[in-house]
Length: 446
Image 1 (cartoon, rainbow, N blue to C red):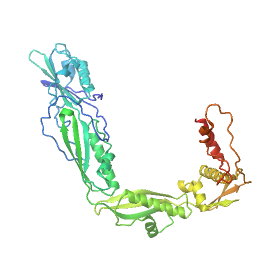
Image 2: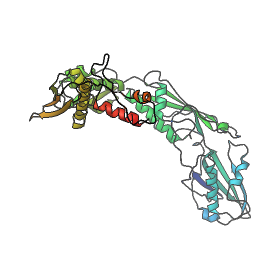
Image 3: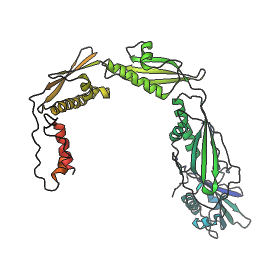
Image 4: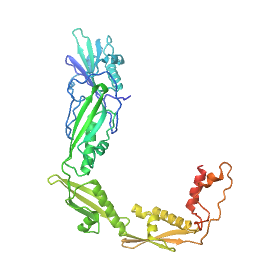
């Protein structure tokens, strides 16, 4: 059951007194299907609203269309007055009498402002109402007639996005809105969802896009079907490209390497490809620590262009060599993760040492040892990493013996072991320290 807490308590004293409490709005996010909230109800008296919602315009809904009196008094003025009658009224509920037993304030009892507030809370606790007002009218005999006027809550029944066939698609925009079917409808959440969709559209170059929002209300099931209609407008073009930092490239070289071209269409995918191509170029030049980022994007509505500012720190050239044994450069790049991580630190180099050692051990050099040293020029424009390999003598795995086992068949254990004895095409068997560690853990996990 949804629970709502009133955040404002107001009373009017001018013949008719009104006590108003607004529920905290529950947050809503994205989904596919919503359960019906069954109750006997009649449609709202007003026509089904349809609203246009630019980001600066509020959403029109049954929850916001009711005019509420302005506070001008205090409930204390009616404290202790006899209560002649207590009623609950809701335009969309045909027979609200079943709610009256929930109220702490009873007819025939003196008016108690705390019981009035408890009654409002009890109505909120049903999860059916988004806003509740209490009207108190005093007759000539000094008795008070209380009326609790409630506006029921609505829940998201469907979410559709039309007018955006390609990137970003309607489904992508709906996901970006983070609206979840079945959760409570609030104006604030719709506005937040619309802003999220606008953000995705801008990322793809549609800076002039407009989103219109319309609703179809279903009072019997307390559901609202939301339709977002997107008018994307023309896509922005790439404007001026600026470089900061230490790119080491002229602007034309940069544009050729990145694939960007002034006048071309703006999109997130294009920038992602450009960054990937630039990092690959610097890596090919041996600058494994190169950092390339987009630091600014400036949109110009007068000509629908987007200027980019790239910050590039190319870093020093890194030369990786292997001494003591032959190892193809493709295997060095495979085993040493500095190429994949675009970083250079001891953890990555130690991991590379272990992988190179394991490689030679699988070739029969079971005693292989690998270490590394780093050298750097005073100008810090060149760094050298040297992996020193001591292969040792070549051996072969003659046999694998399993002892101490009392619970599992030998075949069950053996099939989990990577280490293999020599035989057939395995001239030296298969062995490495890392394999042995994994085999031990596999047996322990049985």
